Length: 257
Image (tube, rainbow, N blue to C red; front, side):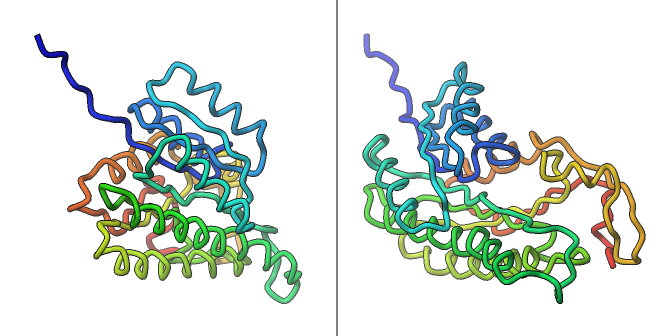
């Protein structure tokens, strides 16, 4: 009697996998049987994510990575190639708000540069490395999902660096989507509003609104974001969610400002 064959595990890179959305997405993929390279700046938090995934079906690889450093990104993708052989998904998630609530005229250049290096340059470096591997591997192709933001559409007060990089990320998504067509590389973007993570704790206690008032905002379970990313990731390469918006239902986004 012939033994039943199981489909080979797909492989993903998740940046910013040590906490928040990145951790939740990594755990969701691991539970679905994906092999996942966990990338982030702090080894200890990556190992915490891997420990949480110990009972999952997929295999986790922790790689300390600062996405703003080209040499770190090159080492990350080389490690993935060596360990897993191919790459099916990059979730370009690593990002930072930068200093919150600082007026544009007072924002230090170093703070601006840090946000740009992480949110935009880091996303480019990871996408470039993923593109190279997906183009060369056989069978050819793969998927990139960029983590945009509600701020890719509508800014909050005093968020010039974060908002500018998230708008730029939309341009990166569109260009990569076009350039990936000949190589079966599908590229999309998920714009997330008020997922409950450490980064959004301030939303629940009160955050500056466009009218100058402080107001608490509703949040949603980060697991709902993770399930959406998994849905996008598991589509056949002939189908693509170009842009998805997932947000807390009652947050002030539609009509913000």
